Length: 169
Image 1 (cartoon, helix red, strand yellow):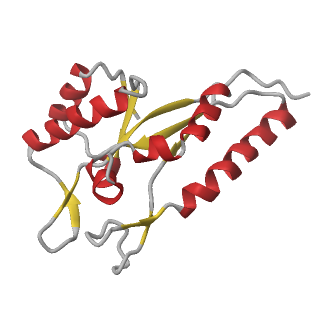
Image 2 (cartoon, helix red, strand yellow):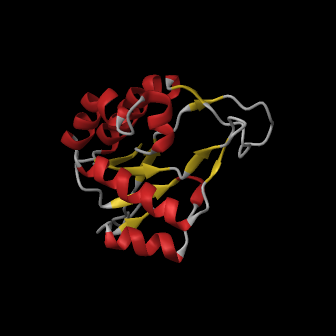
């Protein structure tokens, strides 16, 4: 006789691009956005798989998608909110199905040799957060943020708090 207690599931997905690595290291500076095939094809597959589990087990599993809005997206696609616009129909479907769209940002900067690295100047990071938050907020005010490369400091946490973002995933 199996007695199952109530438990919670958090399914979260980052909207990161397909990349080519000329190095074998995942955190190489050589990361360049080459496309979005993984997201384009994978988002519906993921959504459908979650729905099939919900149906099979008679449960609701909300999905939270962390959508990139940052200067690297702007560099490659002309607008920081390109992903919000490109996949807007899918984001509406997520929200309609009790999911959430939250903010994913990378503090990437392009170097003189056309490689990418993490920005580490506090003033520039603050500017990135404020400018990109304003763009994301024009769609919806984010409750949660996921910072790429797991970059978090007390300084960044204070800025996030001032932006009224209540959680860091």
